[in-house]
Image 1 (tube, rainbow, N blue to C red):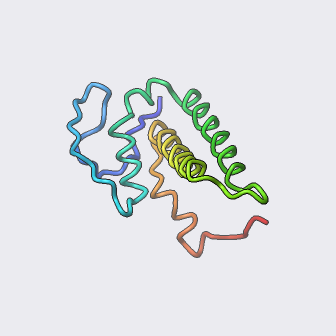
Image 2 (tube, one colour):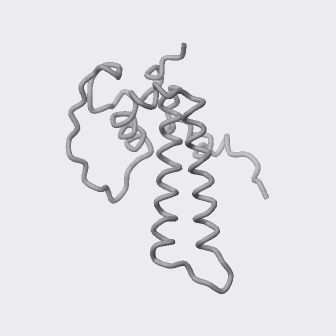
Length: 133
């Protein structure tokens, strides 16, 4: 079985590997002006890892696909011709983007993937090749 903490960033708020039995003492989190990918993934890990890991990859992937569907609906509601989106529709769109990111971070956490490290694919000019039309 894959150890989900194997590749997790070492600069967590706590020391040692995360387990479902480890007590977590959260400090109040102020809404950040700008949050790094790593900090967001750590936050999701701290808050949800025990239940996410118990659900497993297949169940978590289903939740992610559900959120993609909700994002698709929100995008459609915000891009109708001749009808601007309402404030509530715009707020929902932003919420659905956040939900997709959270479930993606969850999936990465339970599979031991450091999302920040994977972004080198797009930040290293020697690795960025081709574009999709």
